Length: 290
Image (cartoon, rainbow, N blue to C red; front, top):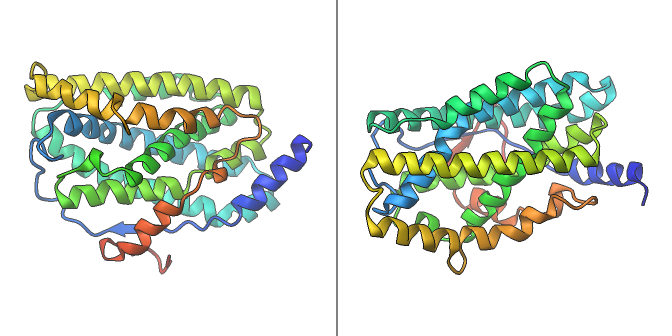
């Protein structure tokens, strides 16, 4: 199949994606416990680190998709308008929820260094081709989507977590899976090529993994759990053990590097099921319904 036909087929599959903006119905006023994730210092520090990245990252994704939409021909913009609007609505909601959560982390004495690094990095690419921004967004969305699927498949990462926060993470994971193809499709619609798509994925992966580990270590340092053997036993189980994060994500990570890859090739059944089974945790925004 030629590249143009391949991209057309991708868009036909993506057109089946229906995004919905949802308001999360949990208590975010009550501060979380210091080790809210099952009393486990490492798992708490890792998830806290991820949350610290979201407000700056989500705003970058919103800006990239909005700019990409404006660069589309009118007919294509019209065809993707509802999806783009819902993508922006979902990401804006994620940004707000995690900003509230991060305020509690700051009150606990944790220091968000990831956001500062990401802000400097984003400033260096301002004014460059919008396809670079969309390619970086699509790459990051793939990382978050495969991590989301892992979170929805495995109980261990959030075992014993405060229920409201487990809900927050699984709601976020479900929506990440739901909008996993939007930036990717925009990148291709604007003529983004395969070489740079894969290059950007490598660059984004290196930054993401390095920043995640650095911020997790920083959280453990400020938390006082850095030297505890139990912290590193937990890290070994979660990252390297059977069913662990690294083992489970290698194959879906590699998929993105295939020339024929499209995010809709990955199944989002777990996300759809979680959203359907936990309707009490959210309500549609603007009259949308799932």
